[in-house]
Image (tube, rainbow over all chains, first blue to last red; front, top):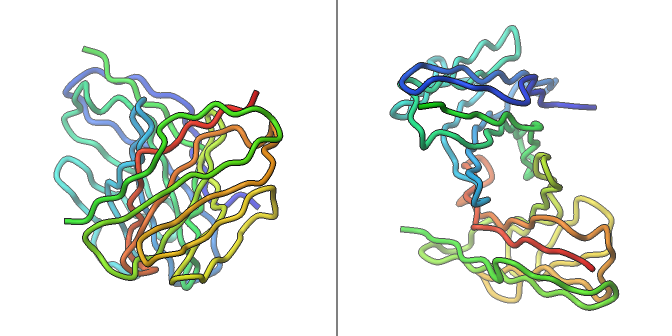
Length: 114
Length: 112
C-alpha cells in the first residue's frame, strides 16, 4: 500500500514567491517521523527538514518550514522566497517507529523561473 | 563533521559481469548504513541496511548482496548483473535509527 503520496509531479514558480509542496501519508503507527529531501540534477539527496509525530510545533529550517496537519495526515513543505537554486526534485519520506526504512513518495519536480 | 563517500560516480557494465560499489563514512563511529536504489523518475527503495559490522538486513530479494567488513564501510555487490539492475544507487548513514539519514552522491549504474 502506498504510504507517501505526492500529488504534484511538477510545479513552476516565479522567483521570490513562496511555494508549497504537498505530501500526505498513511500509517497506523502513532510514532513516526516525516522528512523532506531535495535532489538536484546532480543526483545527491540533501536532507532539508524533519518533523516528529509528537512534535507540537511545525518544524522550521531557514527558508524551509513543514506544515504538519496530523489529523489530515499531511506534511507539506513550504519554501519561502524561492530562489533559482531551489529548482530540483523534492521527496517526502516517512519512517515508522523502530523501522530502518525510509519510505519515499514519487517526488515533485520544482522549477523556479527568473 | 561527518562525510560520506561513494564510488564510482558512474559505471557501465555488461550483463553477467560482477559488481562492487563502495561507501565509506568519516567522522562518526558505529553508524547505521543503508543502500538504496532509485529507478529513473522515481523515489528511493531501500535494498539493505546495517546496524553494525557483519550485521546486514535485506529489504528486497534480488540479485544483489551487501557486506560491512569494517565499521564505516558498506559494500554493495553482485556476482552476475542483470539488465534490471540498472539504476541510481545511493548509500546513506544515520547516527541512530530515529535520526535523519544523510546520503552520498550516488552511483549511476548502466547495464548493457
